[in-house]
Amino acid sequence: MRIGLFFGSFNPVHHGHLIICNFVRQTTDLQQVWFVVSPHNPLKETGTLLNDYHRLELVRLATKDEPHLRAIDIEFHLPRPSYTINTLIYLNEKYPEHEFTIIMGSDSYSNLPKWKNFEALIKNWDIYVYNRPGINQPQPYPKSKTHFLKAPLLELSATHIRKSIMEGKSIRYLVPDSVMEEIEKNGYYK
Image (cartoon, rainbow, N blue to C red; front, side, top):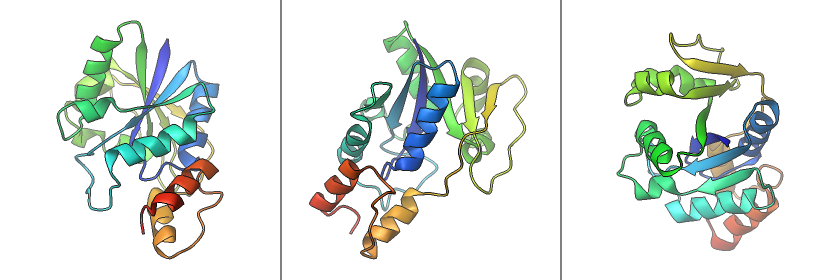
């Protein structure tokens, strides 16, 4: 099975994430998309990061009714910080029957040279790149297996959602109802 891996903090998961993953799955040869909840992205600060398992639960709630989308905690069990190359090698060993592909925004793709072993990453795995608002489509790296997609653009960020919560504003329609209810019930991001 061909599986797309969508890496992120998902702090919190929102409709923008779900729209991208559903679009990529429906317009490519991917049969599933796995949300890889990252405990620590080495290129991001962890100051406002909700607990790993709370973020994982929010992604599970967001994807529970969609059989082609799945939340996984694989990086919770790997050394930290989380490096995509290590996760891909581990997944290839654990699931040799699957073929994995990376899904990322054009902003992340532009930053790939900062990633650990980025040459091996672009040489050995297909990468589906969707445009991010305000980011020009980057040029493909030589010898990469990059596919640029014209996905729906939605200017929605987890930062905006966290800020809205802190200001006492509603996040209805920004996140799935089940995610909003879990955030409210537990007082996350206040």
